[in-house]
Every structure is written in C-alpha cells, then in structure tokens.
Length: 326
Image (cartoon, rainbow, N blue to C red; front, side):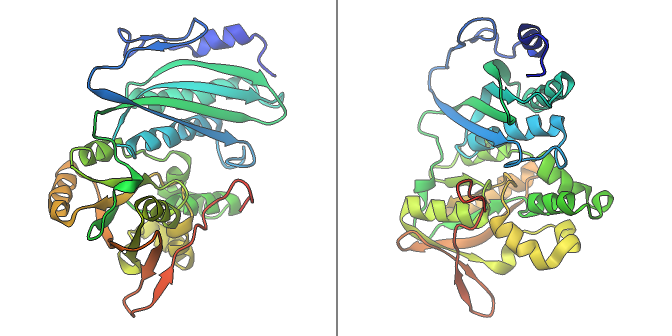
C-alpha cells in the first residue's frame, strides 16, 4: 500500500464538519452510530467498483472514480424514493496508486456527497493487488413510501427520465479516443453521472409506482420490473429518449446502447395511467425530462420492443454481467 501512514490518511480524509452532527457518531470509533427519525425507514445499499472491471485509469481520473462510485449508490437510494444521508467506504489499495490519487478518489466522493449534505461516517483501508472500492450508503424514506420493482400493474404507463445510452457512448469515445472534445456531455454522462434523487422524491408522493435505476441498461431494468411484478412490459422503439449528441456520435449504435449500455442512472418505471398527467406536469414544473415509452400488460415477466411497422422483439438481459464478463 502506497500510503505512508494509514492513520494520517484517515485523518486527512475525515470531514471537517458533519451535516447531521446531532444524529451521528462517525469516524473516530470502531463503528458509527446513527439515529433515524421517527416515521422513516432506512434505505441501505452497497456498490463495488473494481479496477479493470468497472474502470481503468485510462478512462477514469481518480476524482471521477470516487464520484461515480458514490453516484451509483445514491442512484439506488433514488430508485427507492429515498434521500441519501451517510456513506462508508472500504478501499483496497495497490502499491501502484499514490497517496495523492487516493485523496482525489475521496475528493470525488466528497464533491458529490456535499450536494446532498451526506456525511462520511466510516470505512476501511487495506492493501492488495487490485484497486477495489466499495461504497455503502444509508438513506431514508417515509414509512410506506418506498418504491418497489413489484409495484407494476396492467394498464400502467411506462416512463423513463432523461436520455439513455449516453454513458455507453461516452465510454466508447474513451476506449477508442475519438472526438472527445466534441462530445463532452457524453463523457460527463459516463464519468460523472447525475443520480435522479429529486425525481425519486416526486415519485414517492404517488400512491403506487414501480421503479428501477438504469444501471445495467434499459432492457435489463424493465425485465427486472416485469419479473418482480409478474406482468409484461411493451415499450415503443421510436419513443425511447436518445440525445442529439449520441445520435450525432453514432446513430447506428445509439439504440443498442440505450437498451443495454447501462450506467445512465436515470429512473425507469411505471405509474397508473390516471396519475401520468400529474407526474408529467410536476416534472415539467421542476425542469425534469420524463418520457412515456410504453405500457404494462398482463403476462408472466417479459419485456418487448415494438416498432411502428408492427414488429415486436422480445428483450433480453444483455447488459454487463460480472460473472461472464460480457
């Protein structure tokens, strides 16, 4: 491990203030203690990033690695309708990483965490052959307001926020060193994705919403909702929101990246048709892009892509799979 003094490093990354000082005992003891408000449930999630599996030093700067690792967890909290409060970090450090690079990883997390007034309350450091970064996030959601994949019902409107496929386009640019200066928005989508916490909070106000974040690709997320709810989902190819930048960069692959690229961290789900107009209006007022892309039908857990010419294609889970490395 390239840290000369582990305890000095921990002191260096320790926050100089706590946003929730009255409710938490954080770094400095063997474990953190948190107090949860009455009327709320805890939302707990963890995500791990491994060098040369989820990122390389050629495609991600240390700051961006930290930023994205925390963003992935915040997005999971958003998909439950919750709000993030605290995070803990476990990191395995190879000798090839400098102390300055490690500090930059934590700076990336700190930069994003401060946007949500999140507190870093603990973690662990160890040495190893491969950089492994695990982030554990604790959030909250009002009792009875959690948004589950199993909430989809026949007749629902299927929606997705923002645009999808941009993160995969950004990765393609980085891997092939193509036109990086012309497609900055695609690069940012890959390196510094924006969790949709505010939209998740809006959705939590509705009585029934099914929800997932787009981490493994639109097709995979829709299938998870369909399977959990035991329904079939039909989406319309022509209504999938694809950005102009992605179309300009590679129109031939744009749809594939939207369906299977992943790591956009937008929100996809369903809502009763009677609530769609109100949701659309609230998103418009808040300046959020949300698009109706399909409907929910009775079925047994499948998802389909429809085209205007009448063709229907069954969707498969073709996003990244860590066990077959494809």
